[in-house]
Structures are given as structure tokens and as C-alpha cells.
Image (tube, rainbow, N blue to C red; front, top):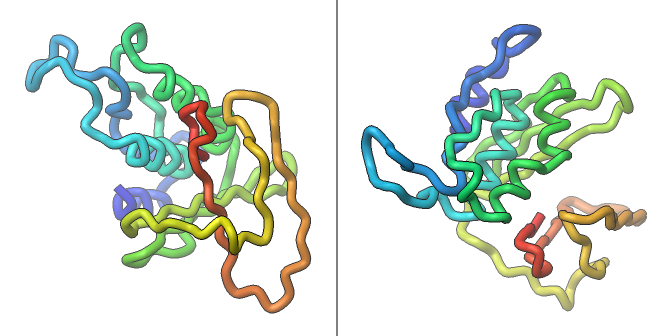
Length: 173
């Protein structure tokens, strides 16, 4: 889908949206024409990636599962206000980088001038050494109002890593 999104974005605009297809998340296959009643075949990480990419591509967010029987983690993902905001209100969404390791997207918030950055890791999971972290925050919940702000002077920095793990609320971003 990364390739599809980057090819379609030049044609996106008022009244034109890249159609990344439905979001096969949560409980799917109910009374399906093909296949059996089942949960999504995507891992949690793949589901988050799909939702974020569709948000940056301004694709219609059409849910392809059964809401009454979908798990809470998927429901939280579908209700992610930041992703919905990017999908509905950002402009100038574009792919900045695409290689074997990373895909990076950026979009602009016309109301505030803020930039939205989506960094997608295409590699196998890398473990970060928390002992070497410049900053380590307490739990920041994706389901609450908690936010962590960091201001840092990082002269001569060439790389900046954001490592996020599940704090127990099923949302590890």
C-alpha cells in the first residue's frame, strides 16, 4: 500500500481521494461471500500502520469489520483523534522517504502551521536500549488526556529515535 499511496497522492485534492480500500480491522468475515468468520489477519502493528497510512493519504476510512463484536484495542484505533484529524483536515500530504528500511510521510495542519510526521519502520522489530535514552517518560496513555512534551537542544544530531511500547492500555503509540 505504500506504493499505491505515493502514486495516488499527486491526484488527491478537493473532491478527489486515494481509495486505499476498506480497513480490514477487528472482527471481519461475518456472513462473508468468501472466507470464514474471523478476526483480521493483520497483526496489531500492521493494523496501526494501515490506519496511519490511510490517514496520511486522505483515504476514506471505511471500516470493514463488525463494530458490535470488535475488540476495544481496534475500537480505540478507529477513534484515534490525531489520525482522524490528519485524514480530515491536513493538507499537502506527501511521502518524504521510501526505502527498504523506512517510509516517511509528512502533512501540514493549515489551521496551526504544525507538521504531522508519520515514520513507518519496514524492518523487523528493533529493540532499543532504554539505558541509553536521552529522555525516558512516564506512562503516557493514548486513551487519556496525558501528553508528554520534550524540549531538547541536540546539536550535531543526525538521528532521532522515538521508541514507544505498550503501557498496558493496548495502545503502543
